[in-house]
Image (cartoon, rainbow, N blue to C red; front, side, top):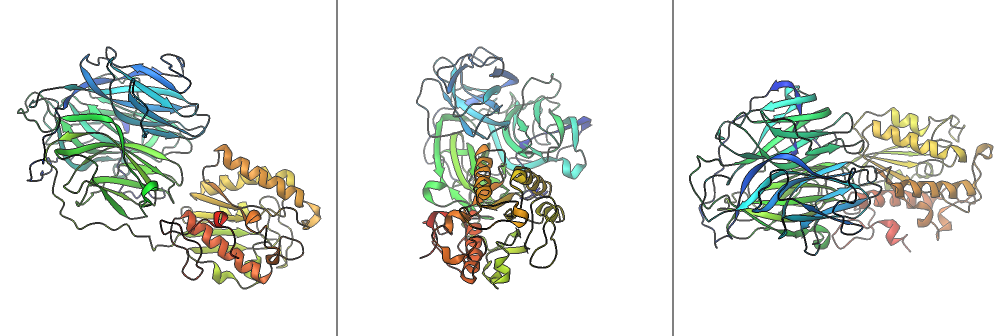
Amino acid sequence: MSGLPKSIVGALMIIVVSSVLVSMPSFEPAAAGAAAPAQASPVGTVLRPVQPCRLFDGRNTPDLGRIDATTWRIQITGRCGVPADTRAVAIGIIAVEARGAGFVTVRQSGVARPEASNLNFGPGNTVANSAVVQLGPSGAIDVYVSAQAALIVDVTAAFVDVGAETGAGRFIVTDPTRVLDTRQTGLRGTSEIALPLPAGVPSDATAVAVTVTAVDAAAPGFLTVFPAGTGRPNASVVNTDPFNTTRASAVFLPVTPAGFVIFRSMTTDVIVDVWGWFTGDSAAPSADGLFVPQSPTRAWDSRATLDPVHPGGTVERAIAPPGAAAVVVNVTALESTQAGFVSIFAAGTVPGDVSSLNYRWRQPVAALAISRISDRGIGISSSGGAHMLVDVAGWFTGAPTTATQPPPSNAFSSEQSEVLFIGDSSFSGIRWNGALGYLQGARFDHRLESCRRLIGASCRGREGYAPSTVVTEVWSVTPGRYSTAIIATGYNDWAGSFPIGLDAVIAATRAKGIDRVVWMTYRENVGYVSPSAASNASSFALNNVILRAAVASGAYPELVLADWHQYTFTRPDWLTYDGVHFTQSGARAAAEYTSRVLAALERRPCPAGLGGATTAGGWCADPDVTGPPG
């Protein structure tokens, strides 16, 4: 899985194999910092376990509790065993049957919608995440859905008010520990996996805080986690769909002395990382580990501060008040430059072999995360570049740990990506005119041949032979080698077969694990007519319409257009008499344009040898926005 090394995937999905009991490593609470909190924390709450239970299913009752066209009010207390004095709840949210791209925001009832979100979805997606939310005066929450999608809400835990010191229900934060990775144990499959309590967790612990990740699910499905010895509930914590086969989420999971169980409805690997547990009646009274909920508050939006996390980089943020030992946040990765994962950990400490969120290129993904806090706050690292949104839902009282590591780096990555560049006689002009040296900033595997077609038999070109088709070329590559495919082919295809060719190319790139497909638009209002008069200016214009509609549909999340047609509109000197093939200066311009497009998509500086406009954040500007030089 691109961006998902076996040694680092954690998140929040548990999977189960029939009647398998997995032994778990022991761990002890991580040492807290010696310094006392600078100020007293507000009186908090303690966890009261609730058997996972479905509160709302919009597929069956779409108008129940509807306030307006976008908001539902869902009563929480008095249902599913939630106590009447509950101040906040841990819930699971699932968006299904989505008709477009959108997001979900959960908040206490009766208050204005904050600038925060809990879940993001696209057309056709089924997406789940967890949330911790305060309740309104009547014990209800309001759920906003920005686009048409059915909503499902499950409850997993309740937080009730308590005095300054108490025994049961407090959170004992630990260093994150991986307790299950079926990729290592060979337990990929379906059905159930039973996990005992980790050594070091007392038998009367009421719940554990875990991140569960479903990895490379073979089909759409879901994961359900529940206390051992109880019936499997009608609830889920992680859902996958054809576009998102690796998903993660954090959950406060009630447990019994026998531990807990993970059920998987589909064949998948699963990873479970433990972040701590909640005390039972045997625990000594203390004011540490109480949960202080708050209205969702956006603590960081890297789009506003122009400091996305670059590939392999880490950013630190102080997002909790004094007197906090751990924090509960919703983290969203968006506008990502490649597939990858995010780790949330105490700033200035070693993050460990776990993660909190997994994402694909460009698709927004949100996940609830629980993290220890240091005296410098939290650290946010990413294996692939992404903008980050961090919304705080509350924190646990106690002393922060002490940062021992130097401040991290978040520099631009110097690693070059592998790019498969397939062209016909138009972009083959880069090679014919000696301009290959202007393809910079990545390792380009350029396969530029005249008369190439998307599908069907290619025509005989300038080189004296008929090259293989784009689909054949893609199918010939090693799976997982290329992060990007650039398609500059299609002038020779029959107009009526173009949509079929588009689908065939995308299917091939998906099969080969190529995350991003950059498609060059076709020049319109030109004199060129393809061999056998198969296509011409009118078909090129129609193909551009088809490409733009494909991107807008959301059915091709890996597809992005590089608008070569618009970029060259005022530069006829770059093209020969037919309006398609390059002059010598046009060949260089095409290579430089391709290099800058890729640099902008990967959010890195323009290649040093080419220059180009730069954004305020220091990365290469999109040439489709800045236009051609001169």
